[in-house]
Length: 233
Image (cartoon, rainbow, N blue to C red):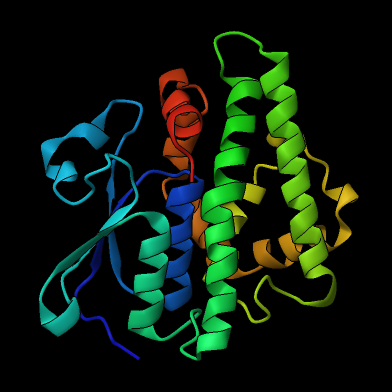
């Protein structure tokens, strides 16, 4: 278990990937300072940001109190969750069997739910032309993935048993279920999980960080293309 005396520097934009980190930091009660990276204006390509996020994608963090007391930067939302979970000893178990279970569902989100939900969102709302094949393909795949979550949650409260970074990684993507063409009434156990997650104060606070920018993002077609077209993990 670690303590934090200096704020973690968070490079962020209010998106499903950004919410992973704000929710985690809120759950931990860790001090952090937000630096907004406006993806609609191309700020993710600034050399100063590239130095800590070489794939030009937020979120990223700089922890001034990294290993050995020296600063460390971390990019990729899943890697950030793992780093913070190890550092603070919360939401990421140290026992190997339990850790493997969390990692399975974390990487399931990173490799499946995020990219497919992002593509469904893009082709349903932001593609320059309607492509029925793409809309059907990605909407159906999100529906399948929601079914996977629903089955997983039939006999447990959270994806890996106890509340963990696996749940934190997934909630931001499920939050936009309607715009992905999904109806949670079709997935009763997923719907129960969703309500439980959104009732957590830290989840609510994390999803509110920079909400005023999110409202602007809704009208920013270029930013939406970046978020939902190029890469959504």
